[in-house]
Structures are given as structure tokens and as C-alpha cells.
Amino acid sequence: MNDDRHQQRQQKVKEKVDARIAAAQEERGILMVFTGNGKGKTTAAFGTVTRAVGHGKKAGVIQFIKGEWPNGERNLLEAHGVEFQVMATGFTWDTQNRETDTLACQGVWQHAVRMLADPALDLVVLDELTYMVAYDYLSLEAVLTALQNRPAHQTVIITGRGCHRDITTLADTVTEMRPVKHAFDAGIKAQMGIDY
Image 1: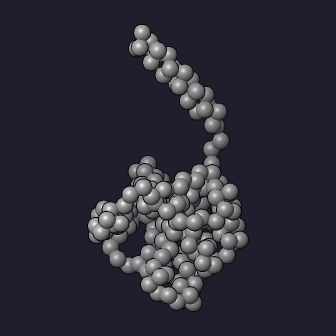
Image 2: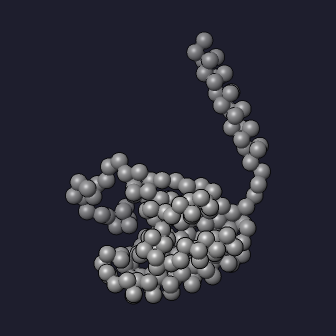
Image 3: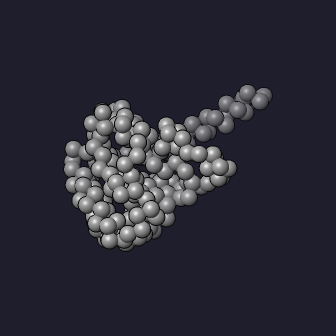
């Protein structure tokens, strides 16, 4: 009797899933946002880049805030044709210089604008973009315009805490990472190959 009920429940689930799949017929690139205070936003974005490249798609990555320290994802993905443009000033709390940070941001943003207009790119990652908007290094309007004018097939992933509501409203998929527990809070040092 339990097996029969289980089979009936699973059949109802299957019918609902099949109906949703049948109803989803639009084909276009999507805007994804990985935000929240939890760890894993950039990691999730790079997982998607790896998936895209594995399927023969072309991707580009813009990294705001990141420095020039070793980057395992870049080491792997550049060798597979993924273009990286990195702000390379490091964390803004280290530089503490609004003018140089703004100039560095504007410089790498020009590469982002180019990528967001490139029909050859199937996927563009704008890693830590949310901070650039929050700190007013980038105009929200410029970001929204570039996102809205990108090629129809192009998917974009934006990462970072505190994503502006206008960006999340425009987005097709928004995932909020929530911290439950983190090794660093217990005094465990970040590890190359695991944390970065």
C-alpha cells in the first residue's frame, strides 16, 4: 500500500513538472543575480561559466574588487578561452582611496560594456558589481542600460552583497546566499583551492 501511494504522489509531481516544462517555451538569455551575505556567490557564477564552456559556449568575466592574487578559476578558464578583465586594485577597504578605486572601476567597466555588446559571448559574469553601484563608482543607469541593450541570447550573472533593487527587479533569477556557519568565523584560515 505504501508503494502505491508513493507511486501516485510521484506521478502527480511528475505531471506538475512536465506541465511547467511544457509551458516554458521562451528562449533568450537571462539575467541572474547571486546576492546575500553568505559565501558562494562567485563560486556559483564560476560553476555556471564552467558549465557553459563545457557545452561549447563562449564566456567573459569582469571582476570588480578582486586583486592579483592566485585565482584558480581564472587559471583553468582562461586556458579554455574565457576572457578575464580584473579591476586588480584589491578590496576597497584596503585601498581606501575613492578616486583611484573609481578610476579603476571605470576602466574595467569599459571592458564590461564591450562584453555586454558582444553577440559572440553567450555568458558574461559581472563579479562584485553590486559594490560598484552601492559605492557610486558606477552609475546605476549605465549598468541598467548596458544590461537591457545586450544581445537577446546573452546571459549575465551579477554577484555581490546588497544588490540594488532596480537590478533585482530587472533580473530573471535572483538567489540570495544566507550565512548559516562559516569556518573563517571559527578562526580557520582561508585555503587556496577551497576558499579562493
